[in-house]
Image 1 (spheres, one colour):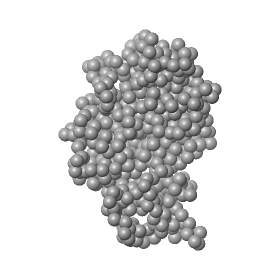
Image 2: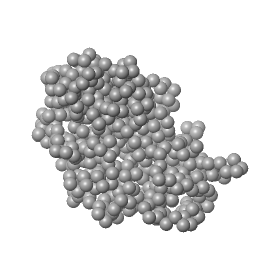
Image 3: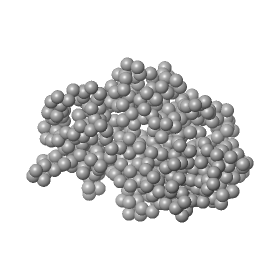
Image 4: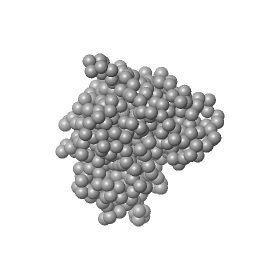
Length: 515
């Protein structure tokens, strides 16, 4: 393509090729946090991702075909993801913590012709492969070739590196499957331009990431939140990312914060709460830590305040979605108010509407709608749901919020989670925050249950902190909620559980508790 020709809208040009041709060429883009700590420089990423085109060509995988990625957070992930974008094949990043039946459903729904799978995950899908009518090639990462599938490293090394294919910014780039917090996951289709849109908005103007930053995202790459944290934002500025292929337990997270000293730490509220409960006296945060962010579920006020007291660093609580690719509503540096989700990220417009679609006033509750350039094209093969969610330039989030006098938004719950008590809307999240503020409670989930008269009242499921005093706790929690958020909002029933049902991305699945 000549210098005067049309601009190549392939996202790989912006995120890889320009760095590989500049000062960042030899800089680590990714660093593995285990074993020998393999690294992948921007220059090597450009070369290795360019080899993916030849791999696909040998196996008859063509432009716009889908390639499923059941890949852990390891350096092969960015090679496959960006290599697919470079040659026009559509990578489909899949949650690595699902059951085989769900994998079978996603592989059939996406009609993926290729599957890349980490060897640790291969047993989960091996029985599905012979019965799948669409898969033509399976590549296993970290294992030798066997009958019926291919060794990824050998296949990658067999081809030369190709140039990046010219595409339009609005061309289909990749799919993510929604986390399934309200049911079956849906295939969300994103275009090339969406990636830079999130980098130019949240990444540049809220996170304020810079080329000398080192990011550690406990949220995984298959998750829209993790994809932005660990790839889009650092790669936009030529920064580096620490990858963890295993489960981010509190001890593991603290160890990475101490050993690698990242400047930016990205997690979900569940992990922050677990780290606070684990062993705060032995916590290590690293001397360079300057920014913590949270998304995936609203951050309880107590968790944010306690984290700041322990670490000396605020958590920027934000709201995003798979449909919008990353955060569009957030607290900002030097402007953190715990208990609120903040204000619109620059580049996004927000509305709160009632059931008739009219704007609600200050102090009223409405559904949140968002408009921005990172919105998905649609749901794959889900016409009715696409029409219900994507209304022209606006995207319905399915979340209920209240607007305060100062313009900040307060999370109230999913549209399906809200219910009325004595004719007044009750926010499950508001009651959950009150419960978490009690010194005995680590996590809580609140749903509607019916009393003997058939009327809906709050029911709470709580996970207690270790060594919590349980004598008289039921009555104590009820009284605590009454004094915190209102007499009518207290949970009529409280059930102590060992854990709460969640998606792999940390969202509480309240529909599983309604029973």
